[in-house]
Length: 254
Ligand SMILES: Nc1ncnc2c1ncn2[C@@H]1O[C@H](COP(=O)(O)OP(=O)(O)O)[C@@H](O)[C@H]1O
Ligand SMILES: [Mg+2]
Image 1 (cartoon, rainbow, N blue to C red):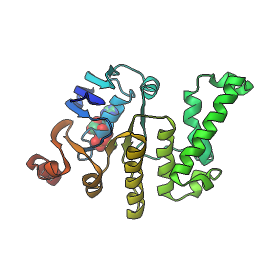
Image 2 (image 1 turned 120 degrees about the vertical axis):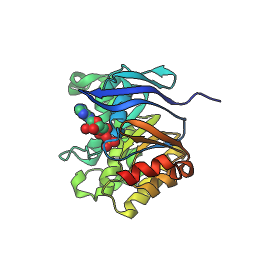
Image 3 (image 1 turned 180 degrees about the horizontal axis):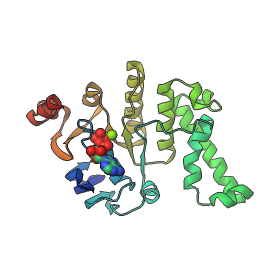
């Protein structure tokens, strides 16, 4: 058996007296779509924040690709190959679609802002490569014609795809999606599901997904982990989880 891509052990996150994550252990296999389910307040976003280095966990370990990333700050976690989207749309409304994709590369660029301002050869090359990558991603999303529009000029589902595209720009091995389909029409949800599956199949990207739409989760997940009040209460394939008495109780109780 090969090692999981992401391994979370006994993850503990406490905020003054509140235990948001209570010794959660889970794994995610490379090339898989794994979903986190649980009622509001269960700790799903907190787990994302711990994995991506936005929170420093109170206890436990996070290992990615064989490396302990528990104590790494967010920008270093990103460099290891983990990207995320946010629960609320996090696009820059005043920047064009293409510039929204490029924001990530400027942040990652090694030549730095100062050199960028003076366009040294290294910065110029980085800028050109960034643009090429951004157009490749836009093509992939079917958004090339919208490169110079503002996000607000596009329908909501398309805006969410730009955010998704920004994660792809980071060449991540693992993408964490926090409620990517919230507020979408059913056609937009279908398009997003297909996009996630296509990126997994064609680019080998793995996904950790939080999504409230249960039929969507059941349809696209290889594995589901269920949290309730910060504790893992179930895990397994969609059909195993769907029939788990603890899961049914947590959802009926919520
Ligand atoms: N920065 C924080 N400070 C204090 N409490 C927090 C913080 N972040 C999350 N929590 C609390 O942790 C619990 C889990 O929240 P969250 O992870 O956002 O849940 P979910 O995403 O599953 O809805 C909630 O009770 C929430 O209020
Ligand atoms: Mg949340």
